[in-house]
Amino acid sequence: MSSEAKIRNYILENYLFTDDESALDSADSFLDKGILDSTGILEVIYFLEDEFEIKVEDTEMVPENLDSVNNIVSFIERKRQ
Amino acid sequence: MAPLPTTLFDHFETTVNKHPDSLAIADFKQRASYQDLFELVGKVSRYLLESGLKKGDRVSLVITNSVEYAAVFYGIWAVGGVTVALNTQAKAKDIINWVNHSEAHWLFVDERHQEFKAIAAEIKSDIELISVGRGTSDYQTEAAVSWQQILDQTASEPNISLTPSDLASIIYTSGTTGHPKGVTLSHGNLSANIDSILSYLELTEQDSILNVLPFYYSYGNSILHTHLAVGGSLILENSLAYPHRVMEKMASEAVTGFSGVPSTFALLLGRVNIRDYGLTNLRYITQAGGAMAPALADKLSSALPDTELFIMYGQTEAGARLTYLPPTMLKEKRGSIGIAIPNTTIEVRSKEGKVTQPGETGEICAFGKNIMQGYWKDSEKTAEIIKNGWLYTGDLAHTDVDGYLYIDGRSSDMIKSGANRISPKEIEEVIQEIDQVLEVAVIGCPDEMLGEVIKAYVVLKKNNSLEKRVIQRHCKSNLALYKIPKTIEFIEELPKTASGKIQKFLLQK
Image (cartoon, rainbow over all chains, first blue to last red; front, side, top):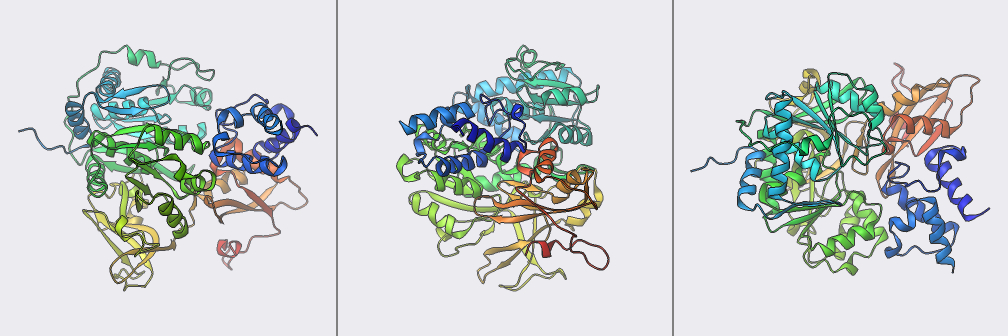
C-alpha cells in the first residue's frame, strides 16, 4: 500500500468514520475542514512515527508538513531521502 | 473627578484614553492598537443602535478569537446590549437553539465558519445575521449584513449608562438540546471577578499574553477582559495543533504571560522542549479548567524555573475564578487549588450544610460579588445551585489545616475533556436517535492528555447489528468534534438499580 493510501485510510477510519474515499480530498486542510483538532494532529504524528518509523522533530510540527494528506505525503518523502 | 470604573467597559474606555497607541490585540491578520479597537467598537455599536438595539437586548456571536471578536463584544456593551458568545465548534442546530433560547435578534458569525450556510438556511427570519470577515469565504452566502457595512459606519461614542446589576453576558455551558444552561453574569459580577484576578496576578499595561484559549469560554473570557482592563496586549494563536509555532511566537513576541488547561501543558511538555525557546520575559503561567496532576505541575515548574505558576480553579457560574494557589506555596501545598481569590468566600460544606473539618470531603460553596445572577430563564435550576446567595459548585474537596483546598472529585456526572465540560446526556440523546440503538450510557474515562475521554456503552435492539463507526459518524454530523466518543462498546444490557436508574459508576470500573 502506498504512503498516501495508508494515511488516507487512517484519517478516513479514525476521524471521518467511513471507507468512502470521496469523503476526503487529499488536499483538504485538516483544521479548516474540521477533520482534526489539536489532539487529532498529535495522534496523527504518533501514527506517522509508528507507521513510517520516523521521528517528527519539534521544528517539523508545522501545517506545511501536517495539515493535509498531500502535505504529509511530501513530508514523509522528504524525511526518507 | 471622573467616577471610578464600575464596569469592564468603563475600564476599557479608561485604558483607551491612557494608552491609545499601545497594542491591544494581534491576530493572524492584523495588529490593533487600543485606538484602532475603540474605533471598531464604535462602528459596531453604531450599527446596533441604528438597527434598533435597546438596553438589555441580547446579541449573539460565533466568532473565533480575533480583533473582530473583541470589537463586537465591546460594541454590544457600548450600547447596553448583552453578549451571548457561543462555542465556535458547535453545530448549527446548537447555535440556533442557543440564539432562540437567549431571544437574541442579532447573530454575528465568522464568514468562514463551516456551519455558516446551515445557520443562514435555518435561522428565524427576524434575526439579523451579520457575516464577520473580508468577504472572501467559500462558505458565506446570503448574510443580511456584510462586515463591510459595519466598517462603513461612522463610529459612535458610547453614551449608555450601565450599573453593576445590569446584565452583561450570557454564557451557555453544556446542556442538553431541550435544556440549554445559560449562565447570566451582570456587569458587577464580571467586574468584581476581573478586579480580583488583576490583584493577585498583578497585571499591568506592561503585560502581554500569548492566548490559545477561546474567548467564548469562561477562562478565555477572563483573559480578554483582564488585559483590556489594564492596557495589556493579547497575542492570539488559535490552535495548539502546532506547538512549535506557539512556542516560537511566545519567544518572538516576548510575552510575559501564558494560560492553559491541563491538556495544553501536557501537549506542550510532550512535544517540545520548552527550555529551548529562551522565554526570558515569561513572568507567569496560569492553569485552570480542571485539575492538573501534580507531576505535570512539577514538570512545568522545572522547565520554567524563573516563571511563576498559578494553579487556579473556578466555574463559569462564578464569572470564571474562585481560587488560586500563590506560586510561593506551590511546593508546600502540592496538589492544592489554593485559597479563595480576594473578595470571594469559600467554604467546604457537608451534605447537611455544615462547614467540614480539615481532611473531611464536602462540596465547594462560594459567596461573593462574582457569583452569577442565575441561569437564563430557568429559576428551577438556579434554585438548585444558588442558596441564600451561595453557589453550590458540585465539586467535592477538602481543606488542610491551613485552609488550602484539595479537589476530591465531582458530584455530577459531567465529563471534563481538555478544556470542555461535556454533558453525557447530550451525547446519549444523539446516539439514541439511531434506529438500531435500544439504549446508551456515556461516561468519561481517564486519559493522560485530556483528563477524560468519552466512552459510550451501547445496547442494540434485538436482532440488530451496527458498526461502531456508524455511531461515531452520526455523532460527527450532529455534535462538535470534541464530543465524539473515542471508544464505543456494545453490551447486552446496562447495569441498573431496581428502579431502573442506570448505574454509571459500575461502567466506570
